[in-house]
Image 1 (cartoon, one colour):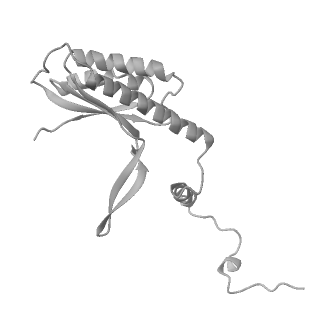
Image 2 (cartoon, one colour; image 1 turned 90 degrees about the vertical axis):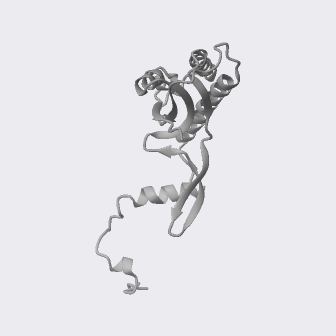
Image 3 (cartoon, helix red, strand yellow; image 1 turned 180 degrees about the vertical axis):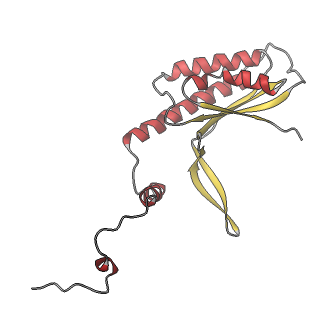
Length: 190
């Protein structure tokens, strides 16, 4: 039996192979992962679990520092409050045992608290609700709090007399030692 070509099929009418758009595969993978139809790579899952563990450490440190009684007396009134946003990406060192991280972050936060410079430290959940405007409505979806510099995993609010002092404090944050990033932003008092 001879097969007759279907001239109505646009794919059969093409000459040779056609290359798909460069970003098509990445978009399809993201869509399938978002719909939970495609699993990530095993190493990506381990990194995500490590990021969750690191975020738990940051939360524990911040919670302990925020709840611990301070012998330093009342907080100084002068200075500006700064937010230190902690980010992690695939380069964050996950080989350090959690107990060591907790001890190091706790010691750092306690030192700031003793000087009256720590106001709060908080761990942030890996995923949350992301709001986005689409046409005439606001759409809510699940997603990771990530940006081009990594996943937002925690924050500290400190008090410093100048931006230079806030940067000096941020440079001592243990998060940097493990490959994380720290963004420093002044809090605008209204």
